[in-house]
Amino acid sequence: MQAGTAQKIVLNLFSTAVMVKLGRVYRGLMVSMRASNAKLLRRAGIIVGQIVGCDENDAAEFVQRAAGDVKLAVLLGLGWQPTEAIEALRRHEGNLRSVIDEQAHGPT
Image 1 (cartoon, rainbow, N blue to C red):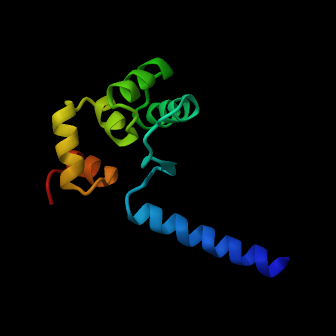
Image 2: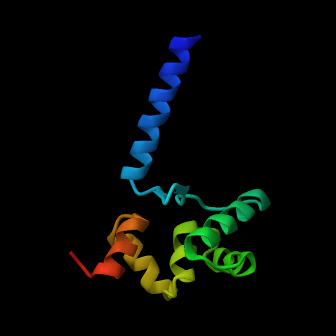
């Protein structure tokens, strides 16, 4: 049982590191998600609200405007126009952290 627990911990650490590196996690929150049902829509709203710093009604509106795409909803919540946000995510291969860092620090 102890060896199995150790293996599970190592695999969890590895998969978490991969998700962070791929840009699927931002500030410890899973942002590579498309909310497709009521439960995921609520979760997406919570994630967007925490990242953007807005109330749950505004966060739900951003998620709705983004058709459930959490990364896009975050950028909308940060004041981006939809077409600009989509293009920035495409340019950065979907990496939300890279998009936000570029906005804060300028292109690298």
